Length: 466
Image (cartoon, rainbow, N blue to C red; front, side):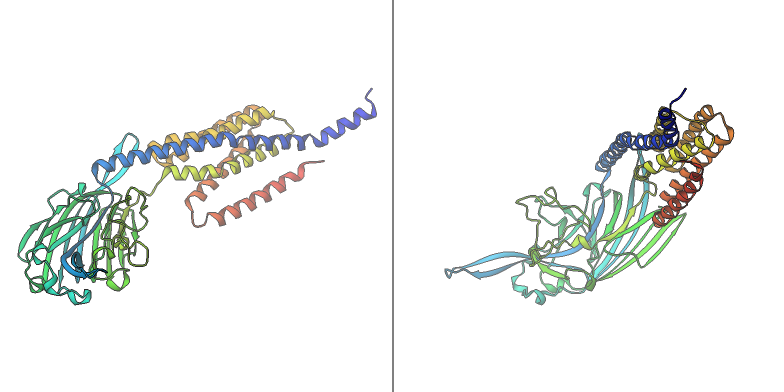
């Protein structure tokens, strides 16, 4: 015969066993986040491997490109008197930007593969033309007698000279001149001497050139003209326009894109002329990480604008990035952020279903279901490297849902219960996929979805008796 104490204990256990089991299941869900950390590290490792492969291919082809020029440089000498009354002479260089600059570029994307990794490269042809009206020497307080006219030069800057497919030449007046890199690192890109004996020889100068070059990821142009227009066209269907300004007109279709920019001198933070290191004539665009590698100690490229800050002409550049629309690794990382939600919803659904069917599953069986949910992410990662994210998500979710449905059917021996859990899993994975696709509305959709989920759980939890 059972004693009253035994009956009381049995009654309390019957009433509280669901709570105890629920706590155990909740603890298991939290413990499953530990293997998720390793899955996340695996995704980051694969993403880093992709970046290394991309950098390796780009280093052999050419990197991001930014074209600056042409710019006229005039060396001149200035006398000075020191504190001891002694006179001397110092050499300076005055730089003059063109009054008008017109650029027409055609960009041809090229897709390269290294194993399972894809890298976007391009070859481009840019026709550059413009003119110098006259050189405003008076604005820099320079007289013609000070200028070393026989040392006058024209310079252009290409971000990665390795990408040049042909000798860089410039039609200057009625002649053709060749530009070459300078031996010293601090020199201004590629330059060539120009014939001049006075300011009159550099008045109403028209120039033109066609540059054929390779690059990767990004093609920028720096608007150094008092008036600069850039027209770019390409067969690439997913452009990302970036830099200091967006194009005034764009047309993007399945056959490619065309874009047009127009920039005026008053929108920039540097003038049409300056002396020596007042402004840095380099190619680094907005957002470039200028660390020790690009600005080493002892180099003469850390030029100041007089306010203590580095002013780089390349910072006003604009252009296009060959944007790859599907970044699988980033989407997988975003999917992992919802892993706890997916595990909890699955466990809650299974818990309510087994309770409604008056059958009890062992916590170990919950653990196996949790491991199946974890393996979903490794399947997603491995398959996405071959098929892309969307297809991989579909395959991995079908495999995971099918495995769990088969397992639950063998445990509960109920087709109805299995169907309900399958529908729940389909809704969960569909919900998460929708959150990944609708980036701008993910918070709104997520909040509404969680609210409705809570309402459903509250409705079915009414059957639980204390």
